[in-house]
Length: 152
Image (tube, rainbow, N blue to C red):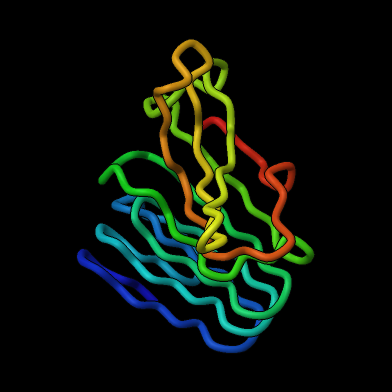
């Protein structure tokens, strides 16, 4: 399935699924969304859900892996709707043109009212300078130590 330029909604339904949304980069995968703010739902089962700048991801029930690529194509964070730290995993991949991870630290900030968690990077030399990478919408069993951070 291919989500073309624009805003796409991709619902994978039940089963173990692989999905991928990447703005403008051709990849060989089950789901591909291009250019725009895409919405991907893995449905029931153990899913690999991959997105980038401005996308909305949901894994559904099961042990899901969320992979987020931040390339700052449109300067928007990725929204993850149903992260459960007791069964899901989360990888954040940051392009070196966005931030050199040697000079930035991962942080998590929880909104006391909504329970949403903002994941971002804080500049080690200037802590006021931050980059929001992902927004976890009311996650359960979340701890920042569950996040794996990679430099691309």
